[in-house]
Length: 111
Image (cartoon, rainbow, N blue to C red; front, side, top):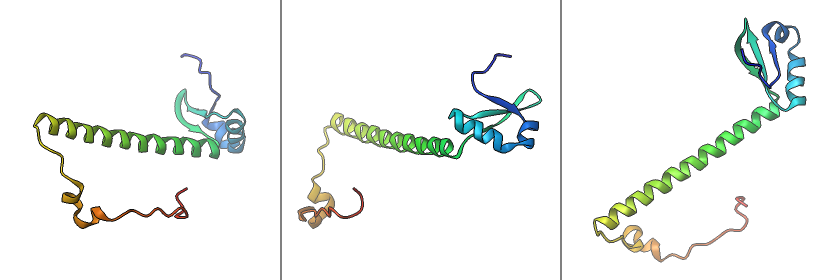
């Protein structure tokens, strides 16, 4: 078995002193792998590290969604151009609402 460069422990130690493993994970800023009979059973993480991973995952999923939407739009525009179909005017799509001047509320809580 290849030696791992991350801390590891076993189920027995986890049962004896879970706090010790959480503290180790927190101090090293990495997960502590927990083995059961020489097989990985899980990973112990500090709460802050777990939350950071969750936040990074959400950000990546959001960015992936944006890229997918950009791709879909670009493919539709390419198809439309190949078929020589004109784009629809904003007024055709939104009707009279297209003439409304948008208002920007600087205190809407999004900044």
